[in-house]
Length: 311
Image (cartoon, rainbow, N blue to C red; front, side, top):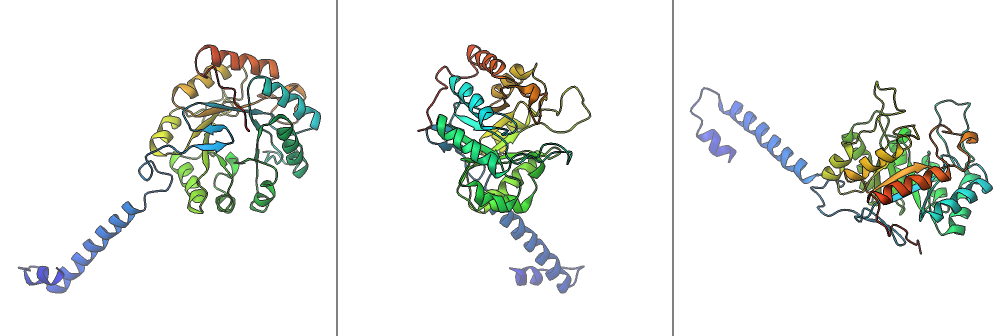
């Protein structure tokens, strides 16, 4: 074709210029075609149907919203036993608890580490629950496989690319939180790091972003939920505790999250929030959690049969 274009050249450009110009045009066209082929693995264009994460009989992204609950940090066996028992009475089977705590201040409680994972696993097994906990370094990913059912990658590590690669190399669901100042596109590319390594079990989590507003701890980007659901086939959850940092507005925020299509919500629950070793101000106690669940059930934001068994 290039020879035909050169042969038909009436001027004023010489033949070499024509060859150079059209080579550049052809290369650009091929590049665009190649980019089209490289639609992100997490993209809705790549997969039309929703991804559903199955954890026993629990389905995340299957059309029935779920609730993830538990303390910010695993502190003691007694604490975890009390909260798990209370959550189970409300039909909760997705138990969260932090063993590794990346804190803003180096002097704040950093978590119990492996001991925390052990307590979380023991508690989850005792009450037939799914264990969810954050891992902060690539070296601990393999270790986590023995203790947790879902590996959480927190907001501060959303662009820890070596951690994302390690998470992509294991056969374990990953709950990926949006970074404090991350765009939606950056969150999707972070998920792509995981999926490109072979792990397709990813749950996205909107947990609020940093803005100039001080009324809440962070600003919940509620529009991110329908946008993520539109752009990606992955399930999307909303952390109503970190996004607000306030106990008094959890119910309306939870309703808003579920109303715009979130596949579930995450909330921090502690037996005695006032003495919690981390995030004491935003954690709710078991009675407040029961009231939250009652509000969601009575208003139809959670199905009456939301109670399920893991096994």
